[in-house]
Image (cartoon, rainbow, N blue to C red; front, side, top):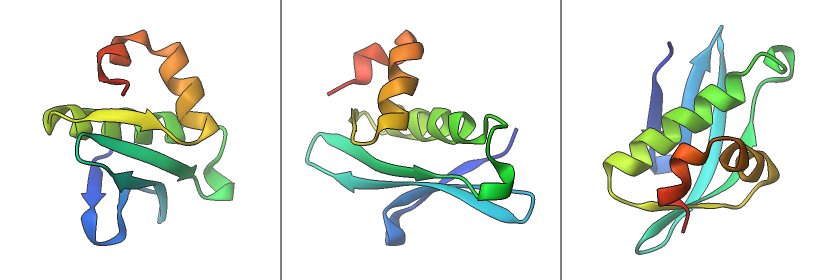
Length: 90
């Protein structure tokens, strides 16, 4: 499994995949992280990379004790399908 990292300087979570970078932009509030946009390189789409990215981002957010707010449709759908993150939804 690849490693998702928090690029705080650019306010995005990143996942290196085959020479490309999938990322999820975010904004911070005092108690939550709002994921505003996810993007996977076009050549790598349809392989579950965005889901892996979001799962890694949610693990980092949970470790920091924050809630998450879905600000893009992909994250909305992901949270709907993965109820184990329900306690984090802000």
